[in-house]
View 1 (tube, one colour):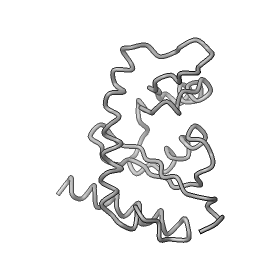
View 2 (tube, one colour):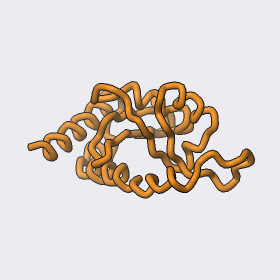
View 3 (cartoon, helix red, strand yellow):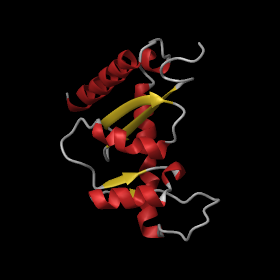
Length: 145
C-alpha cells in the first residue's frame, strides 16, 4: 500500500477494565513507541474517571512514564525489560497482577471477530477508528444485554 498519512502501518492501542471490556481505544501510526502513546489512549476514555492501575507489557517499563503517571495518581505495573540498566522498581507483589494481562489479549481477540477491524480496508484513520469503536460498542452491548 505504500506510505500513507498514517505511516507504513497503524497501531491499535486499547485499555480494558478488570473484566476485559474496552475502556478506551486509539489508532495511531505504527512508528512511535507505546510509551509515547499511553497518555493519548487514556485521553480517548469511554468511561468517566481514570484507572487506578495500568497493567502493561515490557514496553511500558519506563521510569519517566512511572513518574508522570504517579503524579496523575495511576500506578503502572509492568515487568522490567531484560536489558534494564537502572535498579528495579517493581516488586513481586505488584507483578502478581500482571498475570491478568491476558484479559486485554482477549479484548483484541473479540475485536478480531470484526473483519473491518482485522483487515484494515479503510484508507483514512478516522474511518478505521470509527469501525474499531463500533466493534467496542458491540462488545459492550453483548456483555450488558
